[in-house]
Image (tube, rainbow, N blue to C red; front, side, top):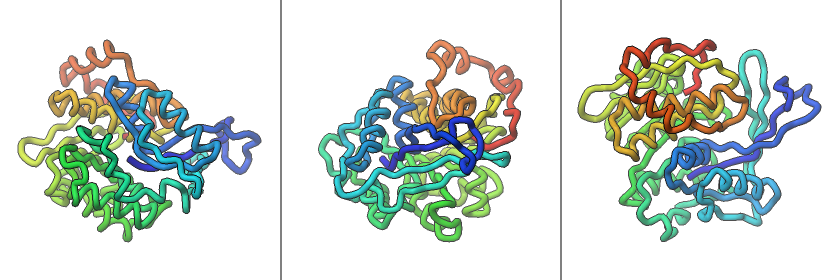
Length: 319
């Protein structure tokens, strides 16, 4: 559940201010996860709002084409579909949002009352939604505190976006929301920015509530820290990186697919890395995951074989 926007990006990969033509795509953290899960063979639905406009229709069509159920999406005639622009540069890709007053910013607690949500096993949320409006923040609080879907395991990806709200304002809100979830995903870099956390154990100490906290450390790897039992670390495989945008969502999709399949945490983390790698290697926000046979071979590797080599060549933070 969350906002998806139309993405405009220079078709030559250069800076936005010099672009002669823009390509049109679709991007949203939560729908990226839904598409990743659908491509891995799971039933996934996306709940959101879009404007009654061409961009809204494009968003719905592209997400549906990935096998995601879009019947829970509301078309709002009184607000537009959000837009963001990518601005590639030597220091990385910057993002410029045009989403204030968007249809998705009007999401509210009643959106979780649809009877078709009965039986949902996982509800995936992110901190992006909390920054969109007061009603969106209230929706997350209703989902996490009121447990609007009592049978669902709630997953919360912190996903701090500095362009939406500064760290000093976001930090206490995101920590409170994360601590009420069942499963939390967070990058070590954003945890350091928000809460001053230096390592995965420090993040886990800050979030005692969830049954599981997953801390992602870019090219180093990812650590799953359950409430009880030992932490599990899996190094990231080497990838030639084109652009990191969307790789964290792909990692989430792979990891959650592992939870749905009820495999061990090491396999969940490996699935996350395997689904993130193709996204790192393309300029878009999503990419098809490896085929099932390749996934099966990778999950069967010994720890030694998996870990050689472990570093991406850019040193960037993709997962």
